[in-house]
Length: 350
Image (cartoon, rainbow, N blue to C red):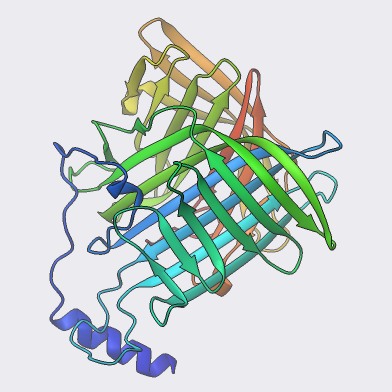
């Protein structure tokens, strides 16, 4: 089967049309841009958040759906040709467990089992779902052997357009970019199922949406990213793209104040300074799991000291064709969010 899929992929690539190029000057439109963009190489719906159970205990969670166009089987009439592929991850960071609980799935689109609709958010993968309802709420159902998440996310703020009105540079070339928006401060409600017991939870989450055809420069090793929901209603997204061999290739982000004013952060406005590392016994990767993120604003420099809820939040998604990375619930003075660290176990390839 793997040999047949490889042959189909090579046949499709020979006559595949070029992927669309991400360019500035676009205008995002909703709800259409909540939905899929199948012509692009890759895109994702990425939800991270903190929830509180009935006993008041805090936990972090992650729900991610990836939609990939491999340009395979474009001229293959078979229904089995992998023209679009869906990957998904789900994770629960529970301090009572002390390690991340993780599940993943992957399948080619089609047959009513996997797919991503255009026009609005509606992604499905063998029983896992992420959808947007007519009332504007997003809902998800995901789960594995150790847990299940049945959650709803209600927007409380308008979309935060990243970069230049949704055009977000990721490298020195203009086409090394994504179309990117976020929905911070989502109000979360629903249930977490663990060990056969369902518990009602409430909390706050962050949804990232990106789609791109040329996300990382060849000289990029990976990235550090954070999304923080701050207690006063402000929101911070910051990232750095690390260069192979050391150093920073690109950086950026945005800071939306509680009154809605937004400052776009350029490469010179963002710095990540590690304060503690953790080494995975499983993969040998060493991650800077505690960091100070500094951003330069017109009113001065603000610093956010990120502390993980616990160190072991590494996700090994190789079983679903995805990389090893660290995706962790973190807290800071006056807020909570997530820190993502990629390219530490091995250089990241998109």
